[in-house]
Figure 1 (cartoon, rainbow over the protein chains, first blue to last red):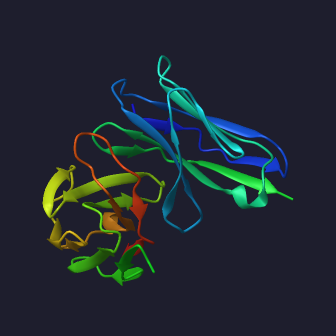
Figure 2 (figure 1 turned 135 degrees about the vertical axis):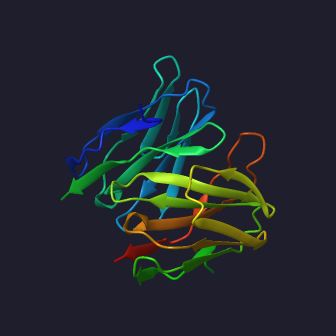
Figure 3 (figure 1 turned 120 degrees about the vertical axis):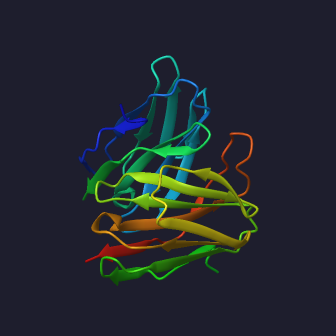
Length: 107
Length: 116
């Protein structure tokens, strides 16, 4: 079983829509969680950390469910610029990356 | 003002050659990393150095040898290149990676290696 699994998508959504996706992780002792964003042929960049109580950053909401070992990302009011691959990242002594969920926002 | 820089950006070479990729960070971070992103887009850690000391060495063939002359530089040397080494290699840095907590990692732009 992979350490971090994500639905690869792609999620094709119109501008203004809400899109949400999850990722599951295998190590119940994992300490911290993140969402990174990677644009095509670019480097990954931190989008947001994920806290136990859930957290928002503008149009982005992240949730953590430790019991079921998954984290989620929700994007409200999608913009064309949100088109990217979103990488789920789990820290258990090192960062383990999922393969990413591709989101395409269309006009 | 590039925070994490890598050279070269593209590297095309023949099987069996030896090549190096250089990485430099000007963020004053203590920890640097090398990652490999293969064609399936999985980003996997290869090595991690903290203040020039190797702290993570994942299962990587010993043809790959990292070298950290100082905490701002982490170079990657690859001997006897193989077809399967073709990938994008990312360098990254973070403020501190001791004690199991990982600060935000800042990635370089990547080096796209193609082995023919």
